[in-house]
View 1 (tube, rainbow, N blue to C red):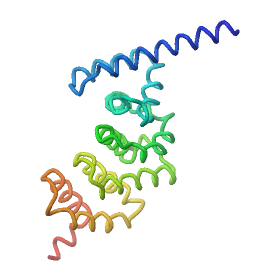
View 2 (view 1 turned 90 degrees about the horizontal axis):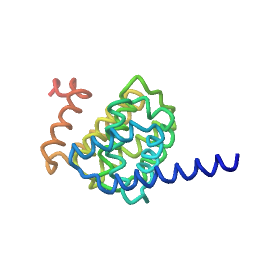
View 3 (view 1 turned 135 degrees about the vertical axis):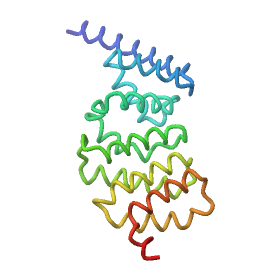
View 4 (view 1 turned 60 degrees about the horizontal axis):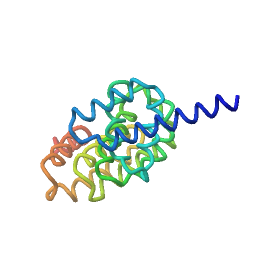
Length: 198
């Protein structure tokens, strides 16, 4: 039994080392990311490894692991089911700007798809992080996903509508066009009757 455990640990360590090496050489080019995604999907053990690397902000290439995780979950969203709680608890610890956008996209997928059933604690963790992204100086793509997340969660937490509207009103004039368009979509969706009254 000891021999089997030793062999298993050796193989796991070797696989982790190979995956880290592949992450090191991965670039932001789509072809590079897709190649690594396919490698991860070809070996089920890699899926848990890439998830742990994506959630560990101390990992050197954790932002690249986030890129790959996003692509994996586009192919098969069900692969996140066993990791939802860890994802929600780790979300606020994501600080690397290149990691935030894919994580925001995954968070939006969790709150908007009927395939996932989050508990109140998990929803609150995502909600708080989305609000933080919306009011911080994070990149526009992440802010846009944050607004989409808040829009979805407002069905359960209606107070989010006025909070989000207030943030939009403060930032709209100085925001980039992509955020302005997303803001307009948010206002049309949730405040259409107010617009008609004006």
